[in-house]
Length: 376
Image 1 (cartoon, helix red, strand yellow):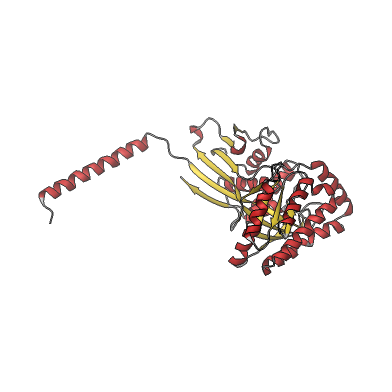
Image 2 (image 1 turned 30 degrees about the vertical axis):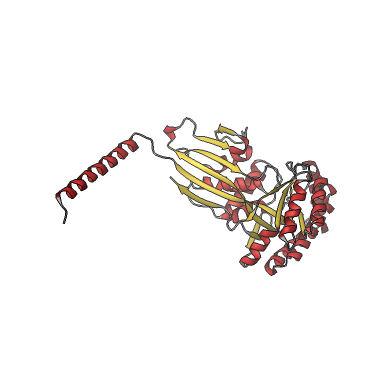
């Protein structure tokens, strides 16, 4: 039973609570609504055994690759159109740039890939938004960073359009933007890895269409593979377009059954089978054979810096190495280390003290591909 002074105290508390609620209500009514925020992340790609066979001139191919973090991150803040001056703003955080865009066919002045993606997705005219992009992986790292960014951008923008795209549709759209809108040479495996994540075996049965089989293994294999992998950035952006054009001209002339392409294709199923079996020595041999097959396409695809890192890897007990992406000057390598973690740490120290700006980038395997969620 309440005594008079307890009743009085309770009434005072209720008055304070009502006042606080009224104050909060007035405060909220005097401020514009918080923006809708769309979040999107997509992993980058390493260890693409069978790369070069996911291209238009290969016509068909098999590719093994691994999705890892750091991921590309996109945020979209959605506003009421009348609350902002510019309907579409892009904030490229890595470049320290923020600029307004007006979708217009081919008139891309700052970051064509981002602007083309915004134009392609045909966001309704009554939607105003700021699109922010960030990735901790260095630009030109040969890890499919641009594909990861495009996949994340398309996934986020898809939240502003009717319907929903599947991961495969997002990957196909991202690849189409690079090839058809920007006229670039581009395979399909990077976009698929970013959309699906994890460890993938990709069978391209007719360019650009493919079947993606994700490799699911026990945690003991997953964790051991993650422990053994090392990603080495060679200190400068990948830049070998002239060499690539020579290689493409030769491969195009040799047709899809060119023995050099077959040598690359064969490394993908070997990699898949090795991971399923937990056979890290077998995976390492497939990585080395793939790198040798890249060098057979053109010696400059395995550059001097890459050879320096490979020599250090061999000296410190590594059992596999793969020049990421198409290869060439700059970019990165994936290394597969041996049984002892101490040897891996010694290798990392040797690489980072070798000069030339070599950098070991922290990575871990992605359990997921494109991830999307919203908050207010």
